[in-house]
Length: 161
Image 1 (cartoon, rainbow, N blue to C red):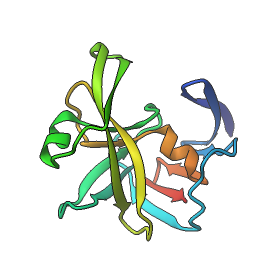
Image 2 (image 1 turned 90 degrees about the vertical axis):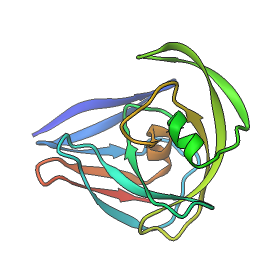
Image 3 (image 1 turned 45 degrees about the vertical axis):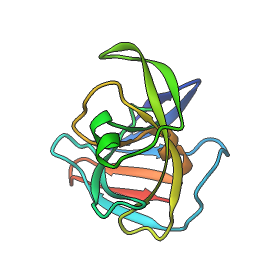
């Protein structure tokens, strides 16, 4: 059974194909793409959230990031920014469901994903409040990938870069 659904982001809607309890995000435009010809297979949380290990350049630790279809940008928490001694490159005013209108810092961070031979360099927006995961890779990240397949019955995902 195939149902139609959508992934919403700022000024754009992506179709999502749902195959029983699994879904696939289809790339629909030609914005910046990674074109790495690599695939990551990762685990889902019990709530079917895809997570991935991230290593920030210059930091010896590995951190768990959430691949979040409900967020648009790349985000980090305030405590994580402090933990890695990130230096703000600017600020942004935004509207957030929990805190309303907030002004938060912007950071330019280089990072690697577990299992991918590539150094990513992206702008991260600091969240206005704490969150379960220190790093969020939103739909801006997902749309730069070729595809994301989530297999909720088997609790794993495939991310094609």
